[in-house]
Amino acid sequence: MAAAVGCAAQCSFLAGRSSLWARTAVPPPASRGLSIRAARAGLSGGLLGSGGWRRRGRRRPSAPPSPTTRTRAQKSPEDVPAFKGFPPMQGKPAWYWRLLALVPYIMPLCESWMYAETAYNLHCFIEQYEFWTYPVLRLLGRLPSWFLLAYFFVAYLGIVRRNVWPHFFRFHVVTGMLLEIILQVMGTLNDWIPHGIYWGKIGAHFWLAVFWTYFLTTLETIRCAIMGMYADIPFISDAAYMQIPYD
Image (cartoon, rainbow, N blue to C red; front, top):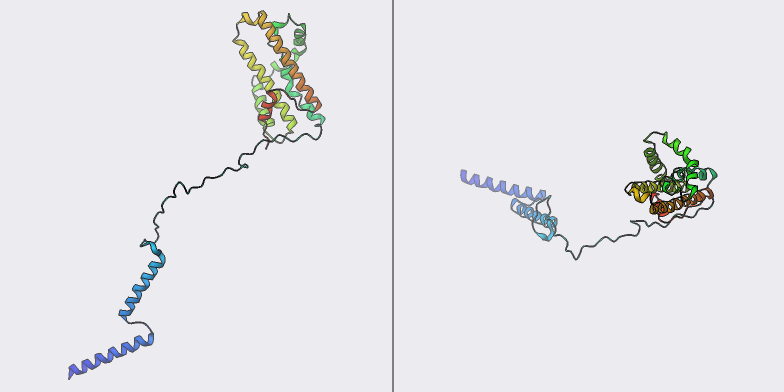
């Protein structure tokens, strides 16, 4: 009797549970397990695609591209702008700029006779020119020893390399500096020449030619500065243009 009652109670419990699953539209545990596995399989297939299993958060490193598929970057003509020259001047610079452009030529003009002492007997003008320019050199000699070094750095970094100054003025400043450097280099080379050659006939004619070449070149640059023009001196003018930024 008790067994029959227990069997009937179990049957009624199972029937009520089946009706409960039917009302809630949730599949039974067995079918739910199948649907969960199918959902997992579909999810993994959607995330991983056809490439197989991969862990979440990591990706399999892709193969490096073959050398044949690599493309080289093409150089653009705008990467390195070519210097096309300065635009021509529309008019003469102001008078004060032309006057300031004469200042860098004072030292080259006054020092052009320094290494031509051996040619005094060939041309008397050189000795007279020394007496005319000696007061200026004496005044420069009274300045501190660091003056020439400071002059070079201030003129080059403060004027030549800065675009705030007119290009005409910067060109003549660097041209005067180059003439001064050329004279200093020639003086250094002169110290290595034996005195017999320097004071001899060969040295006298050589330094006479150097004096007139240097002196006339300086006068030409001064004339161009007064006229508001650019001096066209072989090698020196090209070197002067190279020192001035054009951008």
